[in-house]
Image 1 (spheres, rainbow, N blue to C red):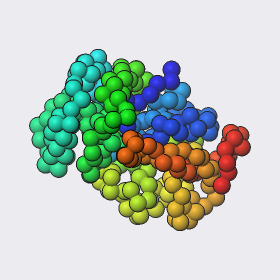
Image 2: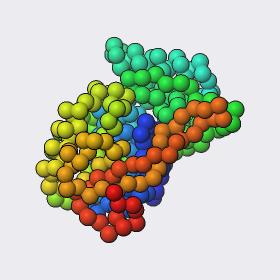
Image 3: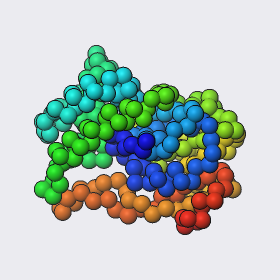
Image 4: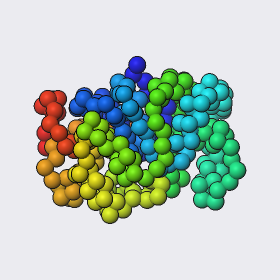
Length: 277
């Protein structure tokens, strides 16, 4: 059953999931080394083996709690008021937890992370605080309540999924096989600081070196950059029109137009449905 992730993510693929899935070749093992909000995983048909990984401990903890007790998590999240005070308080607590450690229990951490994620513009960031989402043009509390309902259905979709919190390179090397498919959505050039642990040019190069050696198949997402052709020589390229991350304007929230670049180390009959770069 196709479901939607309850999370929002900077650079997330909620609007592109169907296009990405339509390009996927047959596979037995499906892996997301940069899982984020898991929009693609949530929307795709189940595979024999599925792996979600992200270095963001808050996101991974949320998914673990969601899988263990989705009804309790739904009750806790859906009964919260939509409040700037609560948002800013919990955003500060989560930042302090990340930087200094603490004794916040897993369940409270999951509730606070979800609340801050959904009440922040673009879901906030690991290293940057974000503004509170509110508008005279949109019923933001109503949207929050609707999204809470996804918690239970998403928990059902995650049954049988391996959930990990490790370095992307270890995950790629562990699950590489001729029957594996990797959907790789790394931090984009210029936005690396928004992600836990940072991500520098050397990491982009290391990732490309790994993917150029794998036995399996891969789909990689980027915005176009001067280094792409050098890092992924010979890969098939597709350009897909989409929307950028949400921004705030005087007329409310909007998503500017963008062009997403998909790189593939295989050919697929679906490629002629899209504009080929």
